[in-house]
Image (cartoon, rainbow, N blue to C red; front, side, top):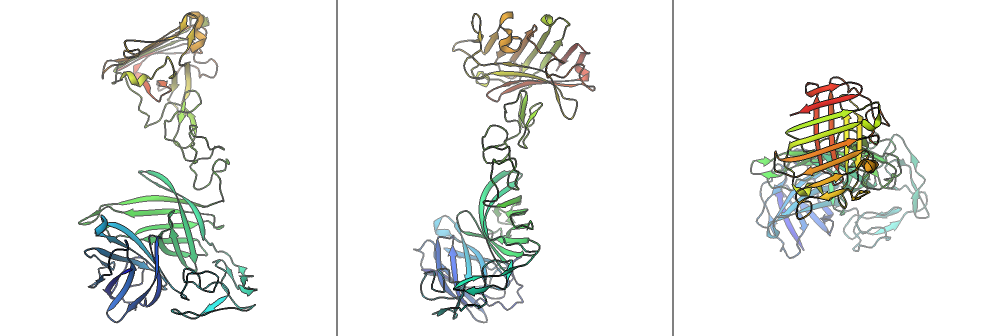
Length: 539
């Protein structure tokens, strides 16, 4: 069943198309697809004033309706139930792309893709010279549609093997081949893995490209034709367009890209217009496009391809490069001590980057004292009058959530680590569990870690860690360490004092559940900064 759309021929149809002065001739038999699910062979007719396009009806219970009138600049004719928006056809008038919407089904949009039939033998069987999509098969000759008669070509007859980068093919025993490659030339026919990125994020998809001479058709992962345009095979430059799916926003979506010489990658930009307003398109969203031919790359092989944001040699998530070889968000936890994901796929030492929002204090004090006698080393950090911290933010350190304290010299472009200590969840001291839940129920008033001198290796020298929830201005965190188990600045892998001038010292207490409490100290807040001592007060 079809709906018939009749319009005038004085057209100006957009970026893909010939100008309105061109004598448009779409007469003939066409194969029209609607969203790749409905396909029919139809006859397009025209005379000096009208062009009639029978469109396969969607849904199929819509009765045939004829629309007529003066076409708009994009050849669009809104109607009560079913509307056709013919956005573009290739200059050779062999391929067209349109969209339509059905107002009876919640204004659902459909993509209409059409290709002029080379033949029509009355069936949709491949192998008889005229294939199921009304194209002449290789090494056959067919009379024009309708009622095409097809005959096989003899050996030595010229043919087209479907490769845009070969010439001079001939038939041998019914097979087309023996062509001579020419260069430079790219043929993008095939399936592609595609990554699209914008200011709003990124996503991966699959496109299938069909290149026929200079014409390029791009189908989406569902099989529907999405873009139509052209490619310059010698340079690999391509431009394809898609009809907008808004009534008032009639700007064409587009992709402009360039393929590499081997034809296995292409990159460029994509612009998507919309949403629609009564005054036109509200805005355009710009994307970068990166595409690699399917099967030419493998996530997790350690080789970075154009569609991968990272490749660390595995497909394991949680190491800053996820299972799809895309960077995990900046600030995501990673396994290395006092490190975080940098948003580029790497686990990097340093303060957690934005958007990791560590809670800040109203007041804080940091003191580090590295004495000649290691047993007298000490560390104190008081985080007071802090931002709103509910009890749930602490997790349950008596069972599952451990803590790590990190102190960075952040003055340089590459921060260095002055101090670190890990306080594990469910830690056991000589007298029993080191962690205690405060309040009833347990943890409602926070948690306390307490270790005796003999227990300090359990938490890298930390003797006390107290976590107190509270509304904004009332939350508190306290860390105290003492003794030779503390690895002070200049010991182990820790950088030595004094802190680099101008001073920029950052303290972070990180929880395994992703929560963080932090304070920063500048030179103006620094009281002592020498080879053995650092003390600062922050407001």
